[in-house]
Length: 248
Image 1: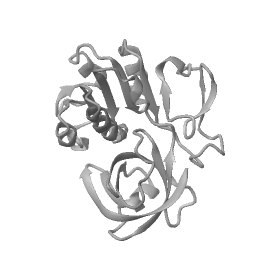
Image 2: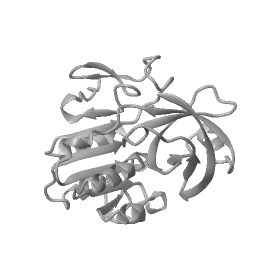
Image 3: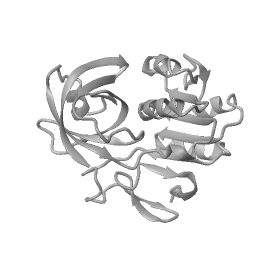
Image 4: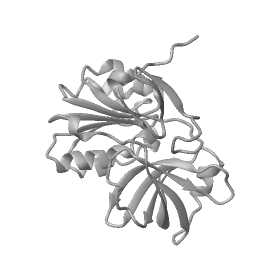
C-alpha cells in the first residue's frame, strides 16, 4: 500500500449513473489486475474503494456508479483536482492459472477490473472471452473497449434490451469450453457463476469497507482456510476456498 497524489484529467458520464474518471500520477507497481484504490474525498470521513479499470503511461482509469453522497460528489470533480489515493490495495487476480482460453464474467460495476485483466491476458497470447451483464441497455458500458482488444465479447441484459436476455449465466451456455473463470460482481451473480462453471476460477467480491487495508476487520468473511479480509486477503478468492453463507 502506498499513499499517492493524483490529478483529475477527465471525469465523464459513460452510461446511466456510471462515470469514467482518468487520473494522472505515479502508477509504478500498480499493474496487477483486480486491485483497487481507496480515494479520500473532501468532507467525507471514509475513503471510497474503487477498482482499477486500466493503467497506461501515467494514467489511471477508474469507473464508478453514483449510489450515494460520496460518489455523487465524485461525479462533480473537475479537471485539475488533486486527489489523495491509497494504491495497490487487495491481492488482485493470479493470471498464471488462466490456461489458454479463460472466460471473464462481470456484472455491473464488477465489469471495470476485468478490462485490465483482459488486456493483460491478451498480451500473453490467451484466447479470451468476456461476458458482461447489466439490468438494461442504458447501464451498459465498455462493450466497444473490450471488442477493441480483439476478444469475444458477449452482453446480457436482464430485460433483454441488448444482447442475450437474462443473466450472465444464460450467456455462459454460448461460450463452449473454457479453461478458467475470472469473475467480479455482486454476490448473487458470483454464486450463480460458481455453480454454473465447471472450471476452476477466481472470484472478486464486492464488500463495504472501513479502512480498506485490513486494520478494522470490517469486511471479514469465512473461507475454507479460515477468516479472510476482503480488502487485504481479497477481494479475489479462489473458487475452491469459497464458503457461501447459509440462510437462517
